[in-house]
Length: 227
Image 1 (tube, rainbow, N blue to C red):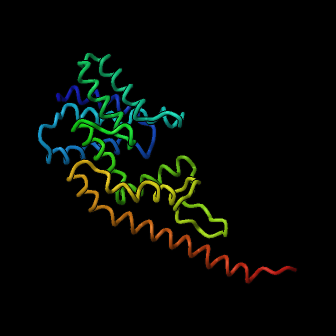
Image 2 (tube, rainbow, N blue to C red; image 1 turned 180 degrees about the vertical axis):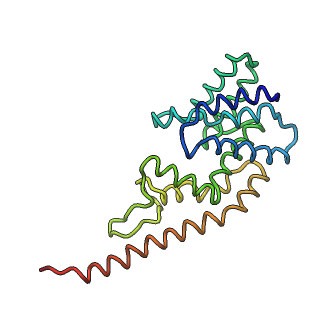
Image 3 (spheres, rainbow, N blue to C red; image 1 turned 135 degrees about the vertical axis):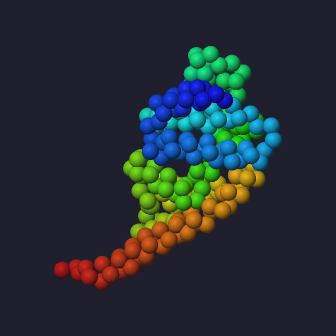
């Protein structure tokens, strides 16, 4: 890929970024992760991979404004339109569109090409470990969702089986289970190195929240009187 092409794609990506949890730094981390993963693979088309990484989240704004939309689907269409409008080959644009539209975890829309699988893995790596925790907390703040919800008895839920969105619910629903969903051995290895940081943070936060409610409610009950 020429520097001119890289700058063109980068500038378009930057014009689309409007989310601090999925900002340009996330895009760069995904790109750099992808390049590290690609070193362990054969026959990688770097022109496809770099372009797909740069453009993979350009549909985020549309999804944020309308949650019924899928940013991967929207982003794929936007990327295809941008590339073809700027004179890129249609087949090239289609391959990048496929990478983008399959980078979001969905059972019925999985990445089929090597470049798409590398993008998928690189994007998921940024949801693992301490970085994944930090990004999730930022996003929960953006959408005004709490750290945790309470069970009917007033104790703090650890997130298991929760319907109410929260950080703990997201951890149990997604973050805890993401480590066995990689296509490449390199990504799986990197994720394994990061996992304990996320586990430790979650358990520490849960213990602190749960103990505050447990001990504090007992003390409050002892201090309150009926008259």
